[in-house]
Length: 329
Image 1 (cartoon, rainbow, N blue to C red):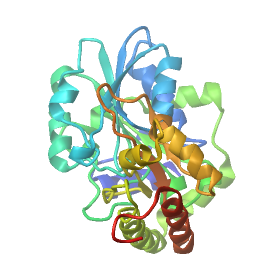
Image 2: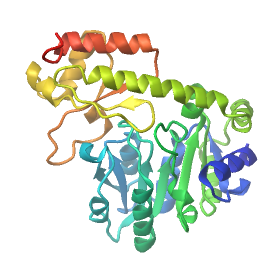
Image 3: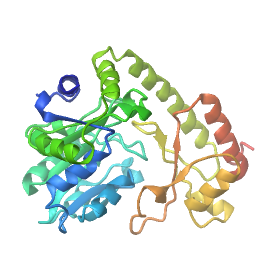
C-alpha cells in the first residue's frame, strides 16, 4: 500500500516520494491532528493558520490540540482564494503550521501556481510547516492540479494529505494517506498509539484503485463538470442568488445575500432552515467557520455529487421559495 501511494504521489505531485515517507490511516482526518501535534509543541500556545471558510475539523482540532487558531479569510472577489498580504499579516513568531486545502471545501476554490509560489516563499522565510489537504486533487476542471509540495524545497516542509473517499468514491472504506520525509515516523507512532493500524481489507481495495488505470476517475470528473455547469447556470437564474463557477471539488458556494434580504431573513442559516422545510438540503456558511470580520455577505453550500434530475428539482424548489429573476417568472 505504501509503495502504491509513493508511486502515485511521485507521479501526480512530481516529487521523489519513497514508501518510508508514507503513512496510512483509517481516513485522512487523523493527519490533521498528527500534523498539529508534530508542528507545534503539543499546542502550547503555538499558532496554526487555516483558511476560512473551510473544513470545520481544522479549527476544532487546532483548539483540541491546545494551539491557537488563526483564520485566513477566503474572498469571493478572489474566487475564494486569499490575498498573500493577508497571509503574511497573520504570521508571527508563534506560527508553526499553515493548513491549505485546494481544491477547497466548501467553496470549490483553487490555489493557482503563483499563489503557491508566494506561500512557499513565506513558509521558507518564516520557517513554518504546510499541511496541504489534497483529497479533492483529481477533481479539477479548468487547469491541472498543482501541489505546493512540487515546488523546490517544499516537499520537506509539506505534509501531503490525500485519501480514497473523493478520488474513488470510497467514503465508507475509510482510507487516508499522507507523506512527508521528516514527519512520517512520528505519524506512524501516533497511529500505533491511537489506532494500531488501518484495516487490511480497505488497504487492498485502495491499493487496487491506485495501481489501476484512472479511467473511471476521469469519467467521474467529466460527469462532475457537466453537473457543475448545470447547477451554476440554474442558480444564477434565481433572484437574489449569484454563483461563481468552482474550479474543483463538487461543491458550489453561491452568494445568497439578496435572497435573504428579499425574504426578510437575517442570515444564511435561516435560509437553510427555510429551504429544508421545502425539501432542499444545504449548509450555511457558518457551518464552515466563524464569519470573517467585516463580511456581511451570506453564502450556502450545495453539493452536486448527485443526479442531474435531483439538481434540477432542487434548484426548482429553491426558485419556488425565493422567486425567479425578473423577466424569468
